[in-house]
Image (cartoon, rainbow, N blue to C red; front, side):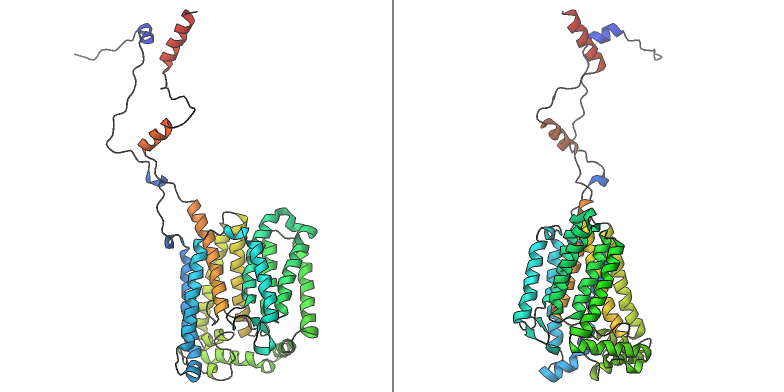
Length: 449
């Protein structure tokens, strides 16, 4: 029998109650698409892989070069070629522990304790002037038998505090009274205490990194230019008038070497000789001669020259390339940070590492006068290595927080959504009524008047 068209009596339809629509019970709850699921991420899976790889390669190069530059010295002093290397390996272990802890902790915690961290660092800088250990060139730079250098900590502290302070200033950064003057006083106190040790390279690093962070936070370029001129004049007067005697000698030899390289400082001449011996491919790991002769501090300040001799220009270029990758990635993390504090913190740490590396490499290539700056991740030295790895941990914490905030949420099941709707307090939980039902109820209410 052919299907006939169905005609509905509207009056009868209005009088009949609507049939409820019931869903067929399911054995398992329905799950929303996978794109809304939040995967359980392990700690190391949330770390920025390019930063991890570059940092690991730089640490590995540092381990090789520290052993290469200290095995003979260690054997002559201790009768074991690996004693000094084992100390460096211990420092690497401590640095890795600090690195993991700071990467695991939410970086926003440090914004609340930035003032306390600043006060503790200033206290340590004062303590080293009063009770510090005498080191080379009549300088007091370390505490606890040379194991703690507050100057290294001051470099990281100024980054953390300025990230918190500049992030809260916003438009006031461009004000002279509320921006430039407080900034200059703060940086002047930190750099001044470091200069009293004296440690010119650390003070210069603090001033340079702070100035760049002030510019990135929105500081006025004209104000920064004027401040840079004042700082430059003050620096020259300090070196030539009241600074340590060795600083004046280094400046004079640098100016003489700019015209004739044979008149340069002996440190620079030995470094250039190391690069010349190495050529493009180097003489081989551990086969360099300059570290045994007149090259000063081959395991710290001059380690880049040893890299140039033993690994050649290609090996030295690889180290420079790794620093460039680290800087680029750090600035990307800063640009994508969740807030202004994280952005300035990641940018400050990146700039700080770049300035330290650039200063060491510039000294070894006779671009700037000798300063005594170490090469990040590579040079021997516990305080420098631990503090630099702490900075990288803070940078990775910024990246982790952003990644976890942008992670998709956990799946919502149909059963859990039903339970959630039934638990909504204060809401009308009566079933919805169709249009016909609403019309019937209205008609009934009108006829009952």
